[in-house]
Structures are given as C-alpha cells and as structure tokens.
Image 1 (cartoon, one colour):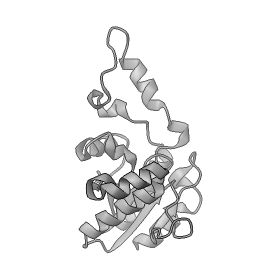
Image 2 (cartoon, one colour):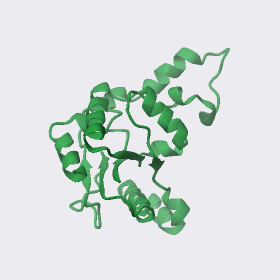
Image 3 (cartoon, one colour):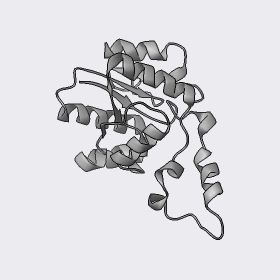
Length: 186
C-alpha cells in the first residue's frame, strides 16, 4: 500500500483560504440563530476551504500512484474520519482518507506532555506518523507532506520520506513539490 500522510494547513488549505470558515459561518449564524459549540457545527462550516489548484495537484498524485490518504493534520482533532472524508470529497478530492494518525497522548502521554510543553509540534507529528507506520506494516511506499519541517536535516531523528511545503500561500502547488512527492511513491 502507498500512503500520503497529509497535513491540510499550508499544504492544501493555503494561507489565502484561512478564515473562510468564519465567512461561511457568518452566513448561517446570526443573533437569532447563534453559533453552537464547535463539535456541533456542520463539518462544511467547521473548516476553511481547500485551494482548487492544490486539489488538482493532489488528485493527479493520487491518480498516478494509487496512494491512499492518511490525515496527519491537527484537523483530525476537530472531526472524525467519516466527517473528514465527506469534507475532502466536498472540496473535490477524489479519495477520502482511509485513516488518521494516532494522537501521541493516546500512545505515549509522557512524551506528549514533554513535547507539548516545549512546543515541538514537528516532533509530535513525526512520532504520530511513525506510530501509524509501525501499526501498518503493509505500507510499501509513503511520504509525509507538511508545512512543519520534519526532515532529518531539521529534526533528529526526522522522517526520511518527507516533503516540506514552506510557502503557506502555495502549499502543494509550489514548483517542484509534486515531483518530490511522486519520487517517494513510485
């Protein structure tokens, strides 16, 4: 099985899209119809929109490689897998995610507490991806795509199969990113 560990913000939900969830919510929620608690907001209003060109790039990669999506984004804390799948589909992604990475606090609460205290989001996400891979030995090819740097050059130990999207307004559609992702999945 081939897998893309996919972050959303800065990868397919670009800086130019950040805040669109609030504009969508303003159209629905008023003084007469107040906004409910976060978990009660419909999924289509809970998240910012994905960038259409970034989705085109992702869809090309999925079609060319047959890879599956595993959500490594913090969005996994705000929706279940089914809701994420419906949202991905509504945004034009041709495949729903098959899984989300486990939360570090659920399999190593001591390390989670230490890294959360230090603000090491990269280290936490890296460990969550490594744990998912350990639990799924049938993966033959994989790549993690994120705007958090989890490369071996930045983080020791980091991820060998990693592609950084350093420009949050361009994400996965940045020049050369698609080719780097395909290299790991072929």
